[in-house]
Image (cartoon, rainbow, N blue to C red; front, side, top):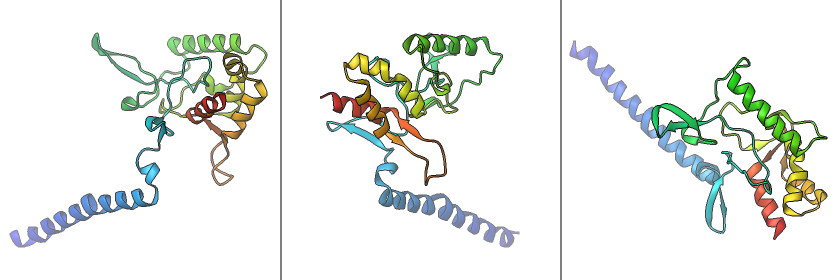
Length: 200
């Protein structure tokens, strides 16, 4: 019996070492060599200090900055560990809200967001991505329409001409991947950094 089991154990150990240790380590090294920035999390620095990642959204509340999509991520409630509290862009707890179209909480939040956005720019159509959350809750990008919707507020808060802020949106708009995949998008962190640089 040991004679039949021994080869199986040897193959199990060998395959575990090859596929569970050697291969992942080799791929990590190759990825780090070919894509060093991406392998380190696509971190964004300003003045030598890491201020975020190009892959994870951040919350910007100030009127002088462009705002990203709403985030549905949560964290444990410090007062009651059986409950959760909103924690926008919490990368440790990525996920959607799982609230459906009949949810009163979702409808109330969306109505509140729509009212706020209508007050901000009453004559423009509200882009859907400014009131809906992404599946991960960490989306770093918004549509060009969502960025252009915010131009009047940002320009007024920074005392900059609308055309200059609109130009920054255009300069920071990425097209479809290989011209085919995905949608045009604007990375909110990159746009806000460009806005800070232009205001200097």
